[in-house]
Image 1: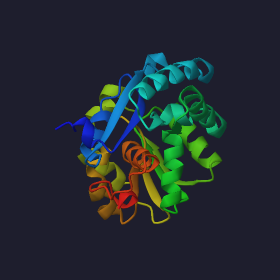
Image 2 (image 1 turned 30 degrees about the vertical axis):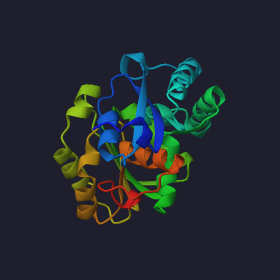
Image 3 (image 1 turned 180 degrees about the vertical axis):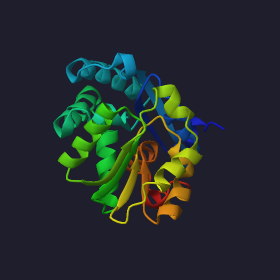
Image 4 (image 1 turned 90 degrees about the vertical axis):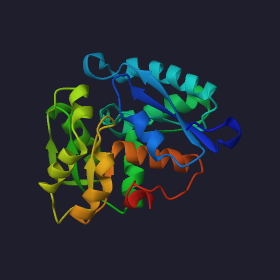
Length: 239
């Protein structure tokens, strides 16, 4: 049930790819009472991929619209795009949002690194649904940020429809096959997957923290909004 305006504790904004199906229902499912997520959509993945210089004005315009909804912070929520141009590119995305709105900004990439820091995690097993090229951009970003990739696999699924259609049980089996005693954390990357729905099952199976793009963005957005509640269902990161 939606919250009456008088009971809203915080609002945050998400800028998501136009094809994303999972970020909004996951935020609605896991947000604590009184927290509302608002979204703006951009055509920026699949056939709509563009260079950072072309993307940034669109990000700024989307952020301005979210600011109109009195969001307290805004997250550019696309894992692949936020990592594609390295640390410098990620910084430019956040700066474009902050310049356009005056609000605190983050990206999926910066939220990932904040989550790894909170978990004291450096050695990462990375799994994504992406084609190899996008997956390798993420490896490069994580290594530039100081992580050691101790295991990795891209599933090469056929686009956004296939990403969101993969059931949580298949993510469990995928991660089961990648168990690695060297890992500090397992990262199921992509904002349009359902791995979050089996997060605690995977952590119990692997005896290690598991993070997913939607989980860590919800966690970071809430912390930026000053909401520090434990979040049931979101694993060790949000305990």
